[in-house]
Image (tube, rainbow, N blue to C red; front, side, top):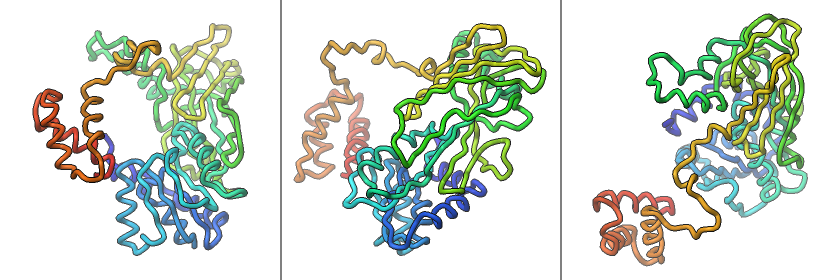
Length: 373
């Protein structure tokens, strides 16, 4: 699992990204503005806004990275102008409306890290009328791919040295969005714009695209490459396109076919793509020349638990062991008992919830820690 340090060091190390955001901030932010930094991580964008003259930043993030942002601002003597809020942006409540929103949840495909829903919610609840949004627009792009490395991702569970019992998982790999660094030489068609997503205005709940790719060379068609062109501010564009000079070093997306197929220069491949504003579901269809459509969807690679398979909306839900322990602990949070007293009482009242008292203590400490206790 990637730690907050590794993840956000990776963001900081992307050449050109900070400069592009700085250009957008300089163009958009007026000295004295208040800013909400959505999914702020360690607070890099908020820090850039403070340096540009913002009067106050509300940094919002539900991960441990928010504690690094909080400590960074304290050490820099900026804590009076920075409020760190450990919460989901969808639940966070600010003490005032802000002049601008800023966010870098652009992901690999533009929309795939939930930025559309995140900014839409914040625009309604947090932003002053006429306030600014950075970024303001995202254009997801696709092109055809012919690439041995991409094909290997799509058939990785069919490797000869893998136990044959796991080869059924190849269907999951074929319905997965793969992060991959796609080279210009991997592309086998011109690029198409899938959507024009305005983040500073209302838009649809779902996006749908249908078009055709004209094949540029004789090759094997392995799937679709995806990337983003993102307008941070008017005329300030950030992209991870393999076709663009000066693109930032962020991975692209590879969406495989169910089965690769041969194509010739001039062939027409039909494509369609649909995605939700939450960014978690992508469906794509590829139609070979004269062939039947191949339909793929990330829904088909969703890993279902036994609880998912057994779920029945008509039956009353029943708490499992973790739910019972959580309920027992929360029922004792009354503003009088300490965390240690709550822990001891839960263990005493429910001795059989976990195999050992040590594991019960660990679980309760984690749950109380989420409440800041």
